[in-house]
Length: 126
Image 1 (cartoon, rainbow, N blue to C red):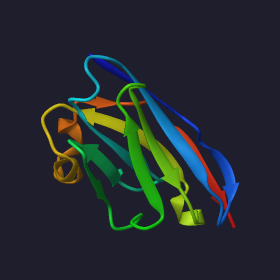
Image 2 (cartoon, helix red, strand yellow; image 1 turned 90 degrees about the vertical axis):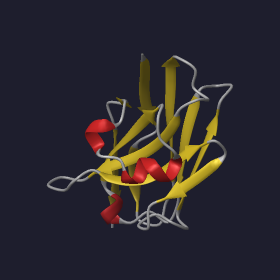
Image 3 (cartoon, rainbow, N blue to C red; image 1 turned 135 degrees about the horizontal axis):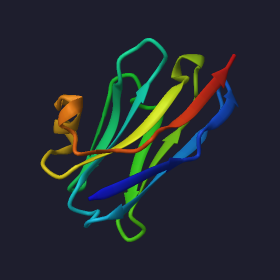
Image 4 (cartoon, rainbow, N blue to C red; image 1 turned 120 degrees about the vertical axis):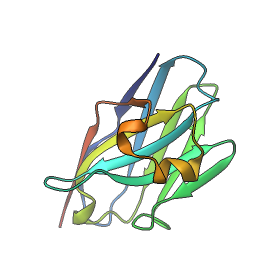
């Protein structure tokens, strides 16, 4: 079993930055693909980024603005968000899956991903 807890969300003005963290507990962290998703009101959950086996894969909507990293010793996943826009407003979720790759997490059906965090709200004002 893996537990995921996101933190670092909040309110920021457009153009600002935030760093989200996802602390994992439970089984071996390094063997899992770890990713970030978000869901805005009335919209489907959207893939943002994933890291697995030294590879990182990003969704088109955040390439060049968001950077994901992980510290396996601390069992923590990060998402550095820059140049934030009002359309980035959403609940941001951390996810973990033992059986996929970074790119695979972008293609995996959401219900097939092993573990999810509870989410953290990010609000970007204009």
